[in-house]
Every structure is written in structure tokens, then in C-alpha cells.
Image (tube, rainbow, N blue to C red):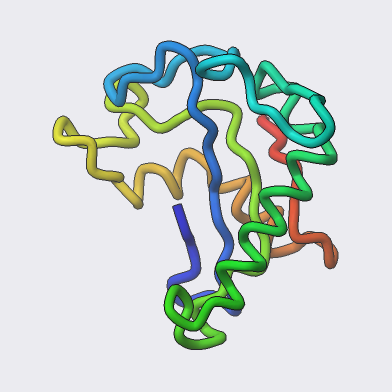
Length: 134
């Protein structure tokens, strides 16, 4: 989910597909399928491990940069994502972040992840800001 309304730049809250994630439930720490394959056969199997996986972080950062540089996807600089964080779980209706029809409740997500969003705005130059729960 992208955040940036009335802010200096845009940031993104990124989630990964976890086993058991249905929209109604957020799932657990294990990633769906065989794990998230990165480079040279290296595999990350959990969301918690992914949050420290330099190859995965680089892959997501590279994908965001490529999207930012695609004028069909991002027609102006004001729409670019400058920083992002990986959330420890997916959005769901049980956590209040999704409606029963699986639409994102932006205000709820922003309130629940307020500290992480503020860290992205106050953090240094790195694009990836590691999520920290309070």
C-alpha cells in the first residue's frame, strides 16, 4: 500500500504471501509455496527471514526503481515511491485492515503501522527501512 497524501514523498508498505493468508486471516510467518527463491538457488522460507534477506531486499528495491522509471506506471515524479518497508504479516479482515470484500481500509492500515510509516519519513537515505514493532 502506498502512503504519501500531504507528505513530501511516497512510501510503501509491502506484504508477502504467507501460508494461511486468505484475506480473512493474515496467515503465519511461513511463505506460501516452496519459499521465495532469490539468486543462485538461495531460498527464503519465512517472512521474518525475508526482512533481513539482503538479496530479497535488493530485488524488491530494484523492482520499485524499475516501476518508478516506467512512465506508463509512474507518469510523474510525484508518484514515485521513495522508501518502503516489509510488514511482518499480510493485511486481513480479522486485523481490521481489509473490508469484508477485501478492499484496503487505508486509515486503519496507516493507524496500525503509524510508527513504521514515520520511521520511513525520518530515516536516512536507504530505500528499505526495516520494520520494527513497538
